[in-house]
Amino acid sequence: MSLTNVTHYGGCHCGQIRFKVIAPSTVIVFDCNCSICTKKQNRHFIVPSTDFTLLQGENHLTTYTFGTHQAKHQFCKTCGVQSFYVPRSNPDGIGLMPHCIDEGTIAEVLTKTFNGQQWEESMGKFPEIKKFSQHPSTNKKRRAEISA
Image (cartoon, rainbow, N blue to C red; front, side, top):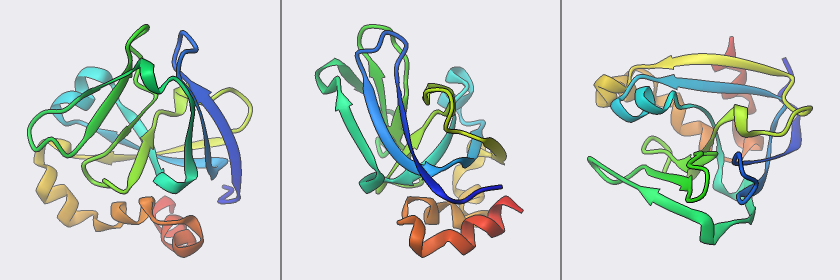
């Protein structure tokens, strides 16, 4: 498992949305079962928003919110793919879909289950999730502990 950061590039299906993100080559992906994540099959890894750059397509994004309106689900207006979003758990971060990262930079995907149907209870049991939107230099130890 490598926690060394690399530059990943990715985007939506039609290519209108392109981004780059600094993240480890081994990503810890959260598999959530809340209502929207179940419908979209949203599996995502979280990075600090400062490590994410939208390269193109801001005018092709549309945003959907519901419930608390804290999560900002952004989709390409053309192809409908959600490549990234602002998670409710980490409003200072970006959740990225590993399947929207261009091939070649993700070496390993580790999956953690998150019970989004009992969101508040799950956050209480897994407060470390907040660390994923902090800069990696401040939380490498915590990421290593979570991935174990």
